[in-house]
Image 1 (cartoon, rainbow, N blue to C red):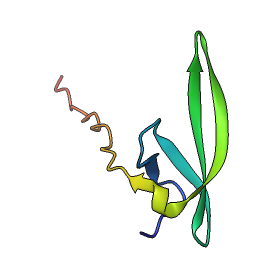
Image 2 (cartoon, helix red, strand yellow):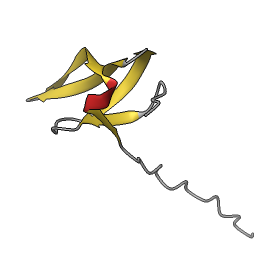
Image 3 (cartoon, helix red, strand yellow):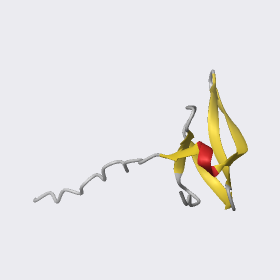
Length: 70
């Protein structure tokens, strides 16, 4: 599978959602955040692309502007 920067993935074996930051041949550099009590710790690691699974992330629905008549 061809991954692109910005794709959201997980390891096929499970784990947190990660964002692809760079792709080099058969490897992808991913970033994610580990929750630690009241804070988040940023993590980065390089993975072989066959170990990753692409997630389909739905965009949040846009709020529709409503015209108000006077």
